[in-house]
Length: 441
Image (cartoon, rainbow, N blue to C red):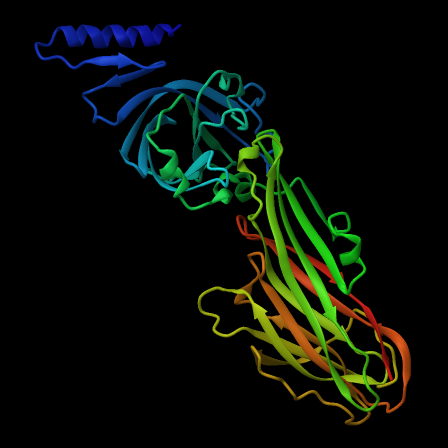
């Protein structure tokens, strides 16, 4: 049943139409009034618009229109104009102002059930944080959850008020919208699941986890010289949770040191899995993407007694920021007595830049009884590990200076990692140790 206001509008429209000799025709489609006085692809829809104010840093007080106490709800009309197969314009009354939001179709989810638009509002006061359309209403969270029943589709346009002193949003949801997008056209779009993870770009995580990925690793892999690690950040998304995960392994390809000689020790850090999961909106799940990247990385190495580091080589497959040039690293050293055993933390001094596959041979050994017992290799800040298969490898030559056999002992190594949420640029420092036992014989 239409509201009293709706009936008045219809009556006025019909009266005006009948008073004109060449009148314009109107029709209703599922509570949608269409007028051929607009362009052929413009429709007027009844929409739900919420003004959610004073949202906290984690977004946990942004749940639904029926629960949130700080939300003002309006039922209003919006016009939706399909300019082409790849763009739409949505015009709505926002805070007493007519705002036009232009949307360019840019991608879809992995299962092609949700499409995403890159949106720009006519007033720079508003930042479009979510502009999406789906016909999979079963696996979708709606702010107006009570309206999300027996509908065929949802168009969501969420705006952040950049000028408000508090964190305020205008949430527009339109149900039963029809967009003329063929399955073949949707399938041709880029897969961009991160565009559906708007909560991770606006809020702080509600929980975090980090550690060895023991459950997800087979016994055969677990007992090798490779360790598997994971980091997760979970965000509140209108009452559901979205969890972003990044996993990596550290590998040490090591060898015992022949008496009086040197041998290479290989240390590798590689991202092997990224994913994103939603507790309700499962159509937004991704097996390949998350907002978590490796933004900073360094390796600290300590030699076993009677040995010292002789040289270092780099290898890697990383993402450049566009002006970083060849992969490089900053190397610092810590001198010490040959026979002592050292542990973390250590103090490093001196620095040198090393390009990919070039060998730095300037480590000082045997001068005034000091040897390069520890080295720290820091990947240059121009590079990041953002995708599965990205890796950074440090190959260091370890030389025996004691000229005598030595029983197996721990060769210590520590990776210091900066995990970043690329949506908020918030950095989370972590470290993981990977020690192996070697002998001199």
